[in-house]
Length: 230
Image (cartoon, rainbow, N blue to C red; front, top):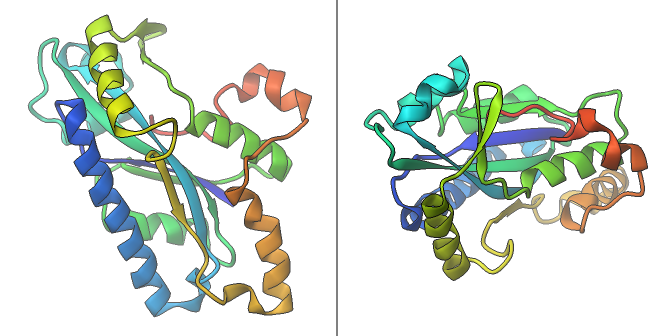
């Protein structure tokens, strides 16, 4: 299993995010269809993800990391001053089945091709699957309204929060429209071996919870088991 991050197209107004999300859904569906038409190894691959949106102003570019700054500038070359630019981003848990995580990354990078725009990394071997799922899902569905600038966290200005939340409340109730799901191909778990793997990965379709107290309270896991671009 792996954790994937895809930074989508940047927009200047929250109302434009819906169009970006619709295009991303279409693109992801196309990627799965294309890859499955070429290899049965994609038949058991599944994805469950959620949308998160970051926002930055041009005046803040010099205060973020080099890699993130390069990607931000490439996605929004005209950003400047105090006006925010919004960066819708997908964080997803991926059941790779027999696929290598590099292959999954390459397939998505064929659509989102800027350096750092697609990040896919396998779960750490030192964590249990339940712990990794809990932590990565918690990271994916967070609703942060702040930026790490230098060594300090800065909360979004009130007008950014108001503009985004007012749009979001009218667009999606809770997480309904922010979730991305791609299931295994129909009939994939028809044999005994696949049935076992299907049951093992079906946690992606459930409300992922765990009683692992170390995951909930360990500060080293605050943002999940996997590092992300955004």
